[in-house]
Length: 524
Image (cartoon, rainbow, N blue to C red):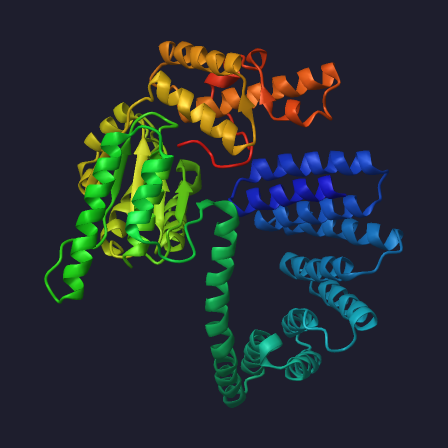
């Protein structure tokens, strides 16, 4: 069932994005998984039919949605299953039949759902409130006003029993329905009173909901985005700079620029404390150069410096690419970009391969919409946000020249270059040590030769530190095969030693690939 539900989750995501064809594709795969799991009917098949119904509902094809929900309900009945999902499907079928125009069938469906909820969950079941409201609106349509009022009074009793924390919004909906009922029954005084009660009942839940939505959105983004966590407490700036000097291989000019910026920020912060005029409190960075040269790491050090000086609320770095900002429909990219920026307030927002936000000859591409929103937020939130835009030098230069407005938002530019062979060698050694490996003398010489070989064959897209990570990953795979063949898996010394034959340069070392080998990652 897990595989079926996973594909159905992807179908729901596609449907939420308005990608109907993609949703249908995931539904077909989910149905295939359900068929493999067992012959219909199964609970998996019931879930698939319910999801197909949601797609039809989104397309306002209520007749097709009703047919799918009837199958979903019938399958669970045939299996002898009566649970919360059975209730949900029956309720949804009632709503669908109402939209389809079959009010009498909808009322029966709502009644079936309420009977089920009473058997399974008792009288004070919060989800029964929207079912009773749905039934009431349908009864109003049929002119059965007394029955509608009875349904709503029962719903009100459930809400009052559960209290405002659990059912405040439900009580507001009940009062809105009562107002509609009384308007239909030509009782304007009661209708006005019910509308006022609805507003009063909704006030507290709306305030609470606004907070919950912010918390929920942040929780969702925290899982979806890559976040490099900074320290929990501000650190001495000199300690941050010393760590940078000790841990970052090479990059002497970059380190000089970071120290100079740190000095400026420290002095300006002190001037502010003394009540003197100070320069810009926050800043935005351009980080130009090939991959794997430490751009993200340098942005992280600058974020920690800002945190230490109180310019940012944390030292975290939120890493995004084009795919995390751009959406496929008009207006959605602006909404998404602002969501990400809101999440990144008080942090460093690191936009990797930023030039992809403005593709040449992209036609109706929505990347520029993200750029437009970023330009506004970089000014309006400059005291709570550091934006670091990174990418290959040539592509970033062309991108910025095509959008001088975006270029003008950046206050500092850091240009990175490829590591030389000796620096690559040093990076490899650092990765090995961090992961509890050591090199024999022959292996160390072989790494040196490999670094020379890889550096000589490099292109502008050479991965530098990432290439060393890949070379190391290939090496420990070779070592593992060798130890198994030699029957030395229980030899602790052999487990930590890399030999010359383990160092093999192949395509996987050159092409960046995601690898998790533990320990600190190389510069990125």
